[in-house]
Structure formats: C-alpha cells, structure tokens
Length: 165
Image 1: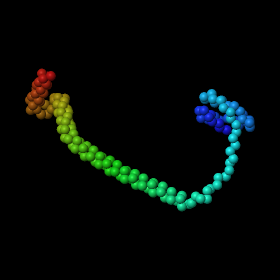
Image 2 (image 1 turned 60 degrees about the horizontal axis):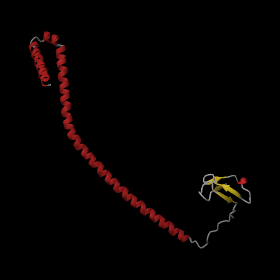
Image 3 (image 1 turned 120 degrees about the horizontal axis):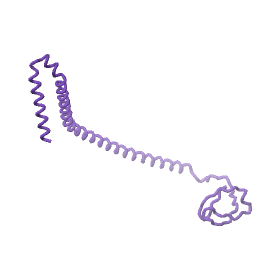
C-alpha cells in the first residue's frame, strides 16, 4: 500500500498489516512530520454513463479534432515544402559557387602541376645523361661536346642560384 505524507507529498510503500483498522501515528522519513493515518475505504461503485450525453456531440468533437489535425498537417506540409525549396536553392547556389571557384583553382593548380612535372622530368633526364655519359659518348662521339656544355651551363645556373640566396 502507498501512503503519501501530507506535509511534503513524499510517497512511501508500507505493508498494510503494519497499520491497524483504527489507524496509527506515522512519521515521514523525509521531513520528520507526524500525522495520524487511518484507512479510508472508498466505495467502488460502477460508473454509470450519463444518458444525456449525445453521440452527436462526440462526433462533432471528433470532426473538429480531425479538421484541426488536417489544418496542422497542411501547414506543416507548406512549411516543409518552403524549407525544401530554400534548401534546394541554397544547395544549387553552393554548387554554382563551388564550380566557379574550382574552375579558378583548377587553372592555377594545373599550371603548377605541369611546372612540377616538367622540373622533375628535366632533373631525371640530367641524372640519366650523367649516369650514362660514357656509354653515350662511345656510341655518339659528337655528343661529348654537347654534354660538356650542358653540364657547364647547369653548374653556372647552380652557382647563380647560390649567389642569389
């Protein structure tokens, strides 16, 4: 059985056998309030429907509720449609901005990508020529002067860059 303190409204679960029929004093474990508790029996009578209630009133109330629900649904649908349209517009604007910015970035990025590939390829060619210098000169004797001039030019460029730094 559940008993509620009249002072602080705290509920307690108490065994029914602990309280005699004439009642007894109780103390709240939360606020230490004392009160006298006795059983109050409520007569459980069967509930009777009031015959004056008309089914039409209930039906009218149901119809009004349904209409309100439908109006709310329509309003929500309109709001959702407006929100979806706004989202789509924002997304399309973002996509347009991204494509224009990507195009501008791609032009600059492509140039630097090609420049880096060119420099790496040129360095690889120089290393390859330096490595295979002797066999190439044996096969192509006129190549010795060209390679010598190329390496001298590269040495001059190297010294020039070092002087700049």
